[in-house]
Length: 167
Image 1 (cartoon, one colour):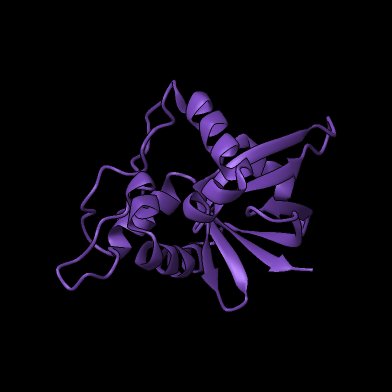
Image 2: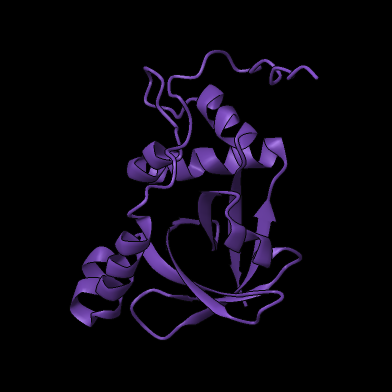
């Protein structure tokens, strides 16, 4: 059985090798960041674009506290990430809570997986948060705009955008 090559990138050659892999120490980093986001004074400094997303498992009912970077966009919050196991719990307009240093807020989550919407929304995220873009394998063109070839590559490798709409 031969392996088929991925389709050619319609936006050209990517400037990066794609999203960074999850590191073995990521769990410890997430625990540390969640702790910082719980401290009132520090959460205001650290939490300008970071928050804790509280996701309920579809089957287990367990609550997963996931630190995420977010971007404000047209009255919603955008989270760009790879299709991690916890993202599967957000399918179908799931209600989630998000802590940004104050009382948790309730949102409806929409997971965007289609190519055009992911490219459009990841570009918004990359313009706002260069560290998030780097983590997701998105570089920049000479004019400072996010590389569509990189965003397409991120989408090909499982990148999704979660849109949180306030309830």
